[in-house]
Image (tube, rainbow, N blue to C red):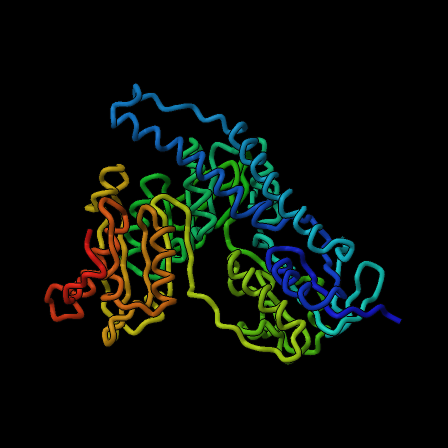
Length: 473
């Protein structure tokens, strides 16, 4: 007879660990199954090592600005790429070790390093054993997508799974896919002296939906490495490398960085044994507010569901799955304000509803041109554009998209404003310190307010009677 536990979690990544933290509050009769490597994708091959590399590349690029300010003799510093990669790996190993220790501390003896396969809604094969459970959470993560036709020259293809293990990098490299990963790593490598070309089938980069913001992004980022968009890249091997053709451009490179997104790690998981219809990707239907698969005692969270492969979303989905996997009644949870940040320079961010999801007749767009933003000018990084989308009827902030310096901070502020359902008037009543990049946000808000108020300057301070209990000084 199969051993039975309350909950089996398959996958010890960010979603699985978030689920585990909730399950431990209710029961100690659970299992966490992962065949390894442990340490989470973010820490090992994702967010953290990439940000370490971006920082080094940014510092190197910043040296050019020092020459303009009269601080150096104009000679560019040399980049020792093997030493940079060793530095990134050292930091990465620290992050990954920390997550590995946290995993072992959380799960203890209930962590099993083995492969797992569903035999049915409440049955799981773990290694050579069969386990029964009341509920199961699928948090198996994802892997970089590599098209099948590319397998013939796999030795010349890098992905995030292999990139940070390289002792050195090729000097001619094509980035295929211009989303978050392709743009971030492509720009970083170009700043380190590698000859980089970027190719994207989509005419929009970084997932930007706003056409004007996308045009500014293309212009800004193309100044550092050429970007070719709107056509599929065709690849063929040569004697010394690979030939890339996309219709308007043909080049030869030493290798490719494949940045085509991710594929859920569901192959071999036994989803076909759940007795429900799967979609064309082989994934089951699920409720994003409960994480429940159909009406089964099964939950799917994080990259495994193919929906929102972003760390904070994976953690939230793991939280929801963990709560519902031990609850007497499954309940829906409100999801957070959508937020995406690309750590290129200038940074790209999208918050709330994007323009393609909004009715153009029902909104106004507030605009701020960061080429004229005073703090950005002082720091020699004055480029970019910010758009805020505002409800025409009630003045409520609905969303924003931008490519501006410091976008990560503006995006966090705007996410809070959208979550709190604040209006343009509410936001303009906030203090804006001078000189800060946030003053650029005020410019966009003022632009939106004038459109809402028939072109009249908005009132940013309210009239009040003298109050001796709240003196000005």
